[in-house]
Amino acid sequence: MRETRDMSFVELNARDRAKAILDAGTFRELLGPFDRMESPHLAPQGIVPQSDDGVVVGRGLIAGVPAVVISIEGAFQGGGIGEVSGAKIAGALELALVDWKKGIPTRPVVLFDTGGVRLQEANYGLLSIAEIGAAVVALRQHTPVVGVIPGKIGCFGGMGITAALFSHLLMTKEGRFGLNGPEVIEQEAGIEEFDASDRMLIWQTIGGAQRQATGFVDEMVEDSEAVIRARVQAAFEKGIPVTHRTQEVERYTALLRSIDPQTSLNPDGFRELWAKALEGELATKPQATRTAVAGDVVNSRGRTWFQALAGHAGKDSPNASVLTADTQLDDQRVRYIAVVPNPHARFPRASEGEVGLEEGWAIARAVRQAIAEDQGKEQRAIVAIVDVPSQAYGYREELLGIHYALAAAADAYASARMAGHPVIGLLVGNAISGAFLAHGFQANRLLALDDPGVSVQAMSKQSASRITRRTIDELEEATKKVPAMAYDIRSFASLGALYELIEGINAEEPTAADIRTIQAKLREAIADASNGPRDLSSRFTTEAAIAGGRSASIAVRSKLAAQWD
Image (cartoon, rainbow, N blue to C red; front, side, top):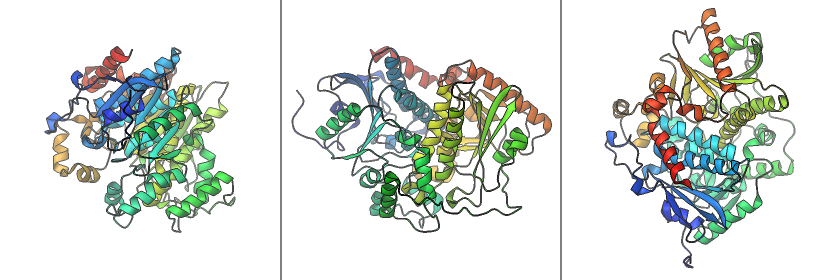
């Protein structure tokens, strides 16, 4: 029998947390320490790996129903997600999905204690988080996906985006939940924007009480093993929500439009706005958008390629941050979407091409509109033109839930892919951090220009240096041992996620021949995606992936499957 003495859930290690969620005596660990599935990328950097790579996967029962509990150990590398740990999480969720398709109910729970991507493995972490998100969106069609954010580290970065996709979220008062950690915001935007040493400010902005009061988590729970176990069980009894938060595009868009970015907003003020949103009492007249003037359009690779591919339909308003156009590519209808610099963005932290609050929800609207319009007929292709320097960094962004805005975009792309839309990501410039997770990383196929200006990474070098406590020179030296830490597109291509790396294209000023070449490549990718699986499994079947780019990811999934039943 389970011990009756109640314990602090926060103080438990990852393994004991997983045991605490499952019915007494039913815990069985998969890929445990004795399986020695540790990261192959840490030792070459002088970092001692952990034999379970900081993630515990437990099978058992929840209220007598088969379940899988995935618990992240914040004490190892800050709960960072690398190739092995990410593959354990994604692989377990994918196997739960297989169970449901076989008619075997399996309840999935994730216990978050993570800062997001493990920067020492960088792009492996980004890849894994995209795959975790894809599995969550697919799985929650069958069952609630339940998450718990208990405390210590909290839940940040790409895993903050992932948690936003969950059906039900529980959080203790001590937990923290967001996208950009306070230290990263301070590094990127300055101490005046967010003082990382102000602990009270941090909890008032992204702590459990604030997140529950503003609808970003379902329930704030007591730090108690017994209470959290009971509330997890209750969450499954509630069933699948009619609408997940990341699908509520109009509600969140209306909320953002009711805010004047030129005035200050504190946590209490946001609580009041949220209460009005729930009651439908928001001001119906939106705040005016600043008007662009002739000649102040900021050019970018994203805008250049959007206009090149969308043609006349691509002459969008210069006052837009997200450009959308529908055109024909031979007999295939295509919706192009690009995020571009907009000096007149209402939220100025997203004025240089970042994916911010309004941009995330605008992408979601554009994709979901295509899904709705194409129901019952041939689904158009959706092409995400990717040139995004990062997500927006700011106090207001965290307060207002930028992680949900980015999750809404990722959710929409994943939903379109699952509905049968060929979704193609075309990388023409930067594809950095959460912005890439939101815009393009859920694509069936990824294409990229082979150009020095095309880069993929989890964080700017300056912030990565601060977080990892390494100099920039030391980080660059590490890329020679771990290509996933590099920024250049050829290093990313070596990991196996690209459908094609396209050579010989003028990325800055494409010629008519360049445009025709890219159109031909898009036609090929669309046709291939149309005839392939609707998940992201094709990323493990490329030559580069099989040759070693994703060898650990493939091995983890194989061993998990062997131990699952």
